[in-house]
Length: 184
Image 1: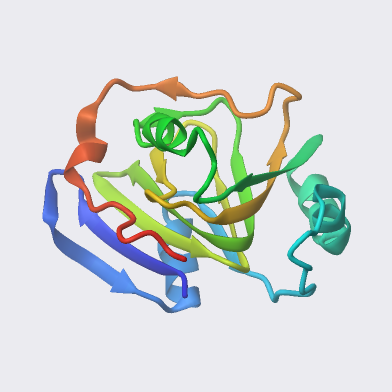
Image 2: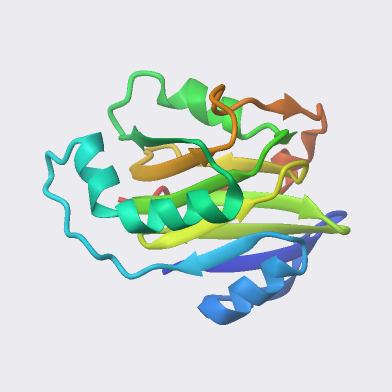
């Protein structure tokens, strides 16, 4: 189940909010401009589902997001525990960064931890199957996929370049909880 824990950015030991309630998660994140929804799992995708199968299963939701946000590019990203570059990928995503465009993800399966820093707080959002999150351009954040990642996400972009990060160089991510143990 998705979950939100909020900390002061200068006190990673004390939670100021801790909830698994979807409405409370959405309300707390909306205060920093982040959009969060829980979508019903419309399609039970077969183990061998292709990227095209994933996109077809959520075509109407994707089209709605594209119209609402002006997104032009859509793809599917998958990472499994046996991915040969999983450790390097995790390290890259664990560094605080920003983007020039929104970061929109819908979790088709699996889980990942978005860590968002804004207004003096760090919001740790555990996104799982059925969660859609849209992080506005410019929000400082990092993402933890865990040591044994397992997720499939639909990603939407306004630019054809896709995922482009601008790293802040701040080591803040090292002070906050990680996604451990990684979800199976």
